[in-house]
Length: 86
Image (cartoon, rainbow, N blue to C red):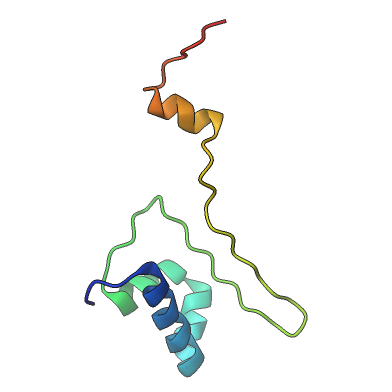
């Protein structure tokens, strides 16, 4: 698949799931395999994908990643060295 933005890839997967009930079932059962096969790409093992199906009584809201660094993130940036030893 040609170079696409994350938003375009999400739209493609969502549209395919709306149009094709078999693909939708595969996506719900095994998102990694369904998306890999559909987009022709390899998804890194450490990358987790959650697929949720909305119903008349349940909606899902996805928030973007926070741009704030945690203490763990800061330690990684500092090379794992405790800058302020106790």
